[in-house]
Amino acid sequence: MKFDEDFYLRQYTDVADAVLRGQYQSGLEHYKRHGHREGRQIFEGSTISLRHGAAFEQTEFATLRAIDRRMRPLRYHITPSRPAVANIFIPTLDKDVFFGGYIAFLNFLMRISLRGMKLRFILLEETSFKPADFDTFRADKLWQGAFDDAEFVNASKRDVFLSLNPSDVFISYSTWTTLDAAPLAERLKKKVIFFIQEYEPSFHCYDSFHFMSNSAYSVPHVAIFNSRALKDYFEVNRIGVFARPDPQFVTFEHAILSPLPRRVGKEPYRRSSSTRDRRRTPCGTCSRSASSRSEPVPAGAS
Image 1 (cartoon, helix red, strand yellow):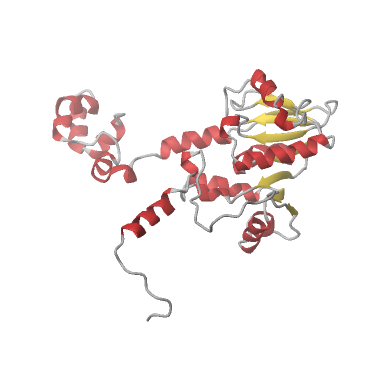
Image 2: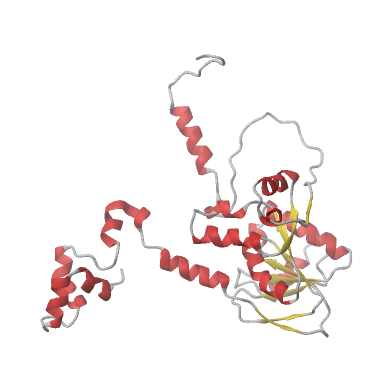
């Protein structure tokens, strides 16, 4: 635990007076000699945390550092002589974490690439992914050669300059990558093409991350919704493009070929990212329901 000298002296005026008198060189000296045995606090909220656990842990500074890292702007310069590309803002290209969202997004990119659009993948959340890894990625037969001519830039550390052609296009995978793309698109007087597959703030508590994620829907963008149901949700709640007149959007439905007959059941929402998993709530509900000995109430009973 880090000792907070300023807090200690503010909290304990007797110690502050003793330091002024020269009895101790600092609050830390007092704490080492006496304060530890007396159970005195060494930082704001420490006693509360001990009594009440994680609910009162002081996490704001860690959150601030994470937000600062996520919001560090990308550096760029305008190069009219550079061939125009579609800049793809994506967190990672690690196939081990590809789930439904990535699969849909990459299939979309395959189609526009095969129709002649040059792509540049801009990686934003995986510092260890190298050009050799990208060569392995794009050589996969799964992509049918669509990414053979694609470019790759790892901008995770925000230490590279991106050359932009005034005719460039900006396509984002998530709320966070939309926030990364927004300043560049604005500089070229463009809108971000935002591939929307869920209402992402729901994966966060009502905290700074929730606010930042939600703010991405205020970025000028053209929305691509992955279902009519999701589009309807955004429209009913006036989120994103539906918060302003003349919304620009398209929708698509996932191709489900030859669905197999199956029993009707319930499946908890789950995924590989532990912070975005939703299985705990339905599993907890089912567990509580199963352990209940109450009899079901017949329909129509009062």
